[in-house]
Length: 319
Image (cartoon, rainbow, N blue to C red):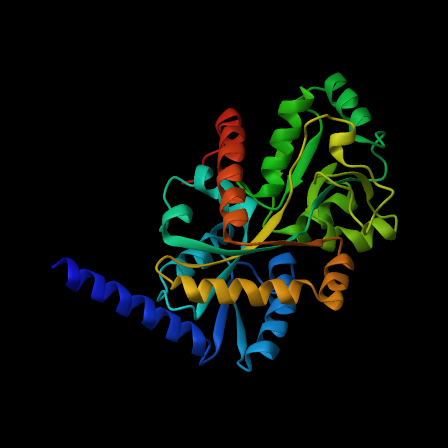
């Protein structure tokens, strides 16, 4: 029996090695759990183009929005574990979803395997130009003099945009009203018209309006300043310890052959090293973050723990 088991193991390893040697033999699908246009879509199309050129196979970008990204992630998690379906995850947002949604059709840690970190596309705190606060320190002081009077738009309840403001309120010691929207566009529209005062939005969507002077940048949410707006400080420079990086990574269904994951990761790393890929991300305020499966797995664990605590403290729950 032991010899039979060893024979099966050797056969499986040989088959996996052979499978990886010819992979990919047909088009590969990258599921994007959000609509076209946006950080996840941009990263998928930029990296997907390079992978297609390297593989000699089409890389199909499949946009599947809904439920804060969870519908697309569930679709990918339930796909065949053969390396021909991957998902571009906004890691932080999906980690938040693990705590905010009472029911999910998948487990981020059980049903998906990490392939590669891809990039960081930070959010930025912006305000209506008439708000008498020009940085986060002044904002916290203003909010404390008007408890609950200020309001924050968000991209939707339970999104990173929502939880960033909850973290800011918890760390800054003030209260404010949360006003959820269905995405960036309606939130930005009401911010510019003065219906709301503040908004944590992604840099790609906010950048044109910041440059046009229609909204004011108060602070970048990530741990480092954005190369697109180097003069804008991070929130952590005013509020020590604040950090809300917006990571993106590629994952595949659990059970995908290890050799395929290794090849997928190696080819993604080659794509991320190309200068035109780096420049594309820099043009929208993001930057490449190369890293293998273990680095992505560690980011998932870290973000699930960090944002779970913020969710519990704020009492956020979505049925």
